[in-house]
Amino acid sequence: MALDIQTIRQDFPILGKTVYNKPLIYLDNGATTQKPRCVVEKMVFNYYNENANIHRGVHFLSQAATEAHEEARQAVQHFLNARSSNEIIFTRGTTESINLIASSFTDECMSAGDEVIVSVMEHHSNIVPWQIQAARRGISLRVIPMNERGELDMEAYEKLFNEKTRLVSVAHVSNVLGTVNPVKEIVRIAHEHDIPVLIDGAQSVPHIPVDVQDIDAEFYVFSGHKIYGPTGIGVLYGKEEWLDRLPPYQGGGEMIASVSFEKTTFNELPFKFEAGTPDYIGSTALAEALRYVTTLGMDNIAAYEHDLLRYAEEQLERIPGMRIFGRAKEKSGVLSFLVGDIHHYDMGMLLDHLGIAVRTGHHCAQPLMQALGIEGTVRASFSFYNTREEVDALAAGIERVRKMF
Ligand code: PMP
Image (cartoon, rainbow, N blue to C red; front, side, top):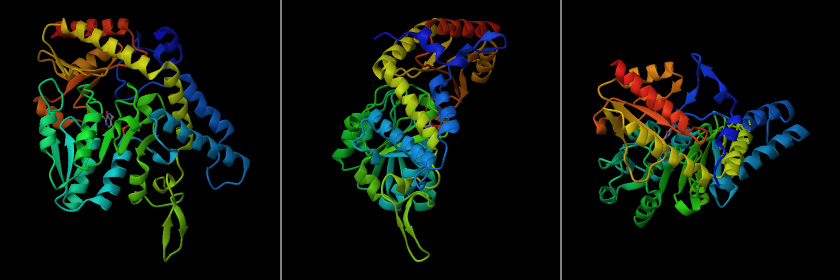
């Protein structure tokens, strides 16, 4: 089904804004996405009509809010095709989900000298939590390299496994290169060695269909705000037997079965990992966002954004001095580039004055920048609400900046 982009754009009031008297062209969707009206309205509705702390309340509002929160959990379960809603833990986002696993998995399954395999293209949030555990517990990181197109070197990956390997933790889609990593193959190889896998889905879940049973990773994480939901809510999917096995991450209300000063027992899944008042407004708004993209169809979204990316590559390649980073065969809608020796920051600032929002810098992937031998890039990242006309404006804007230098 072809998406009707002009109608879709009407759902996103912010896209009608002007900045510096120019129509806003928002190409920073990798950092966060804009929100459709239904998501914002859901939050307003909940605060006006169903706001009460959940789970322990006997009163009407508390029960309504509890029901909405648990329905949201089921919505996430169905969206990811998880087996059970017990496998869905609400967190603050990808970063918190990875920190949770880094902490609880290391507590339960790792000791000094043990290794986690990550890749050279990880976001800092899939590097630093492991380094914190490295400092605390003496574990270490092994790194999958990539080829010049920005694809993981799968032969090198296989060779990283040894008797010290305990976990593989890699991104599904690179936020800098757009590479769609072969996660099924990554998981298959890890499982041959009896090693569990965590997949960082921050850049995949909003853009391509994801089926956690098909991928078969033990853990899969993503952020609500990158898939048209609110900030401050995210998801950790984990296979039930693994989440059962791992100790809690934080202590507090909600995650306990009983507490005395002598002994505390923990609640069952999923509550064991949700200490304190959860973001029940955020969870229900996230469910609304998932309904929104499901109605458009994740396959349609992936096809449209892929087409837009190819069009953008064609337009940008015509610009003299253009260097595009990330030439993987499987790519999602992320386009990182530099032009001649124009600093990425200057390019970003000047594009901004033309109304074009792109991101510049290291994109929280400094080790990847080191591997590429650069300090940073300019990154345009696309959504289904972006158009070919906006890509044309980007190309014209870059050309204008180039001529200024
Ligand atoms: N991983 C990847 C691949 C990302 O792109 C991002 C966000 N830029 C994150 C993790 C962190 O996501 P969040 O800040 O929402 O926790």
